[in-house]
Length: 363
Image 1 (cartoon, rainbow, N blue to C red):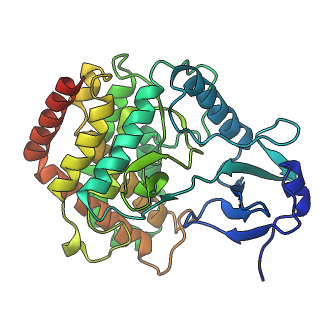
Image 2: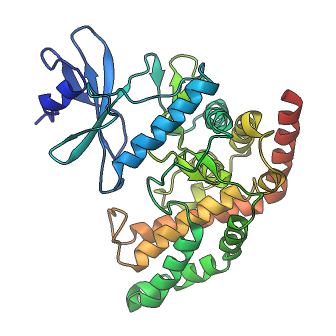
Image 3: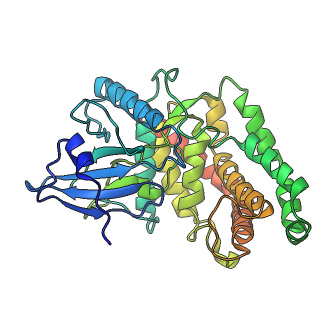
């Protein structure tokens, strides 16, 4: 049966339901997303926000509106996807305790779910870098976390230690070697703790979910157009955005791949994403941030691996699983990716130095 949003929702955004075609849109799994095609052939995106994940939808709307206002003032040429207000001038409409919003549909755009060419990694990373650069200097005081502690590695590490203590005997025995391997990399968590207390490692307005399908590319050319899916736009550290790109662009397979022999580091993709990102934001970063650009990858991979292993030890209470060892295999996958990355640290640091040098010359 086709799901169709209630006409009251459409009317709230001044959309005439008569003759309007509505169909599910995109590959996202969090919010319910629809493409709305009106009688005059205009297109809009209609979304129901998942309040199980985003418990304060008003924080999403507030952050996006403040960012939009700042960008319209200082970078009016930048394409920032700003919500379409309701007839009452609100960014959200509440219907039956559900939160709905409308955002523009960007004609001539497309998304890809994985980087199949280094140029795609470059274009996506460049867009995330450009957004971060344009938002550099914005006052973060009024921004709110849309998912509190989303990338708080100290919290994730403490939850892991607690799960190890409280795990059932069978799962703990199965994961004994894996637990030991993650504990051997606890210096990654210690580095995070140290960085969060360093004033030269500042908070910035970060996207926090920099998978490649959160960038709109131009049909035909695959040139980057803009960043999309801004629900997690909130204050954070540079390692969040950069680390998520390293975690998801550089390896040819995702965390769902159980065959660890397929996990490898594609240096050309690493170079492309660093080149794209640093070409935009390289000259804005502090020296401490520049010194920890490589660390961004281990930070994000280690944290995600910890989360999978923690969930396995807790009995699979958070991530949906398709078979009993699913989270266990995901954790092994991320540990393998981490080790592959660390093996190449010297050559990847050289790539970073090259890209930083190029960024300085481009300014």
